[in-house]
Image 1 (cartoon, rainbow, N blue to C red):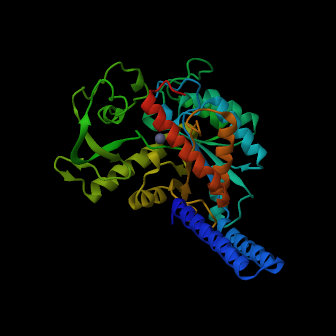
Image 2 (cartoon, rainbow, N blue to C red):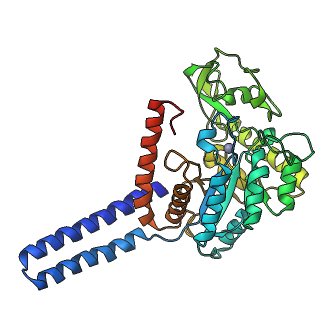
Image 3 (cartoon, rainbow, N blue to C red):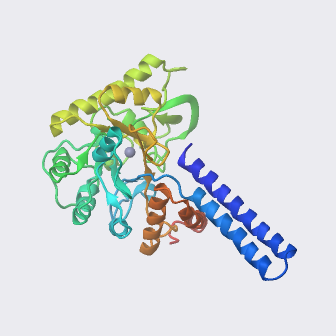
Length: 398
Ligand SMILES: [Zn+2]
């Protein structure tokens, strides 16, 4: 059962119990006049609340929070609205974790404890940063150090800048170099792979559109797929260099999770498995060479993975990988990490008290307290409303 299914089931059961308690109380008041009826009705509601509480409090889970860009100027990323978090929001998130007594632990410690069958500290939280953006080094690292919080950074090999000189200023656009990743390691942070090229593959002969001047950056995966090797500076291109405007955009899926459409057929199992294996082996080899020890955790691009991928990761010595959809409770397999995507503008616009409250509710919910969904759900609905309003009134709104 995914955490969304669990949440729906628990909140529905709680609502039904509470509703039954209220209906029973009303019936009791009608049937039994006077103080006795009122006392019996109150007891009926109390009983419903106690029974409902047992439903709303689930076995504890560990919130793994996944960030991407942490930047005041993430506009160079075409998808920044979906994945970028302002440093002010991020600072507020870390302060919130401190305030609610979260114990931030490293991914490897979390996985090793699970593998050994040991309990994790109460209210544990794990922090992840995907894609290896340079702003992680410039903005996230100092804030994490201020709060003495460990974290794991997941760059993709082809997006790591080849230059070896670290940068401590500049625009913050682009991706980290090995020097900056080694710097993170030197400060005690974990650096683990996120695949070679974050690739997508065509998954059928269906065409979903054509590349044009407005959309080619959103479909940058097509340029990446046609550019073997380093592609850390793709965003500096003024026009698509590898796949020209006007080219058809095929239906696509994540390369390490779905079979590619090659010619007029779907690739066979041998080719599919071979492709995943080459990716994970390349990550293991390069990470071992550059960081001095083999990687232990694998982060699947966009958290998409199938049984084949899990089996290959296991065989190649990765003790855990992402892509789970649950809450990281003690009963779940130690090799599967379920993560929560964290973004900005909880209400459709940035307001730090709301960012803090939304994060708190998200963490508590993942830790098993489903009462927080009663707050989260209206916040999410309000956000959807604001986003719809913005798209109707124009992007300058909010
Ligand atoms: Zn990613």
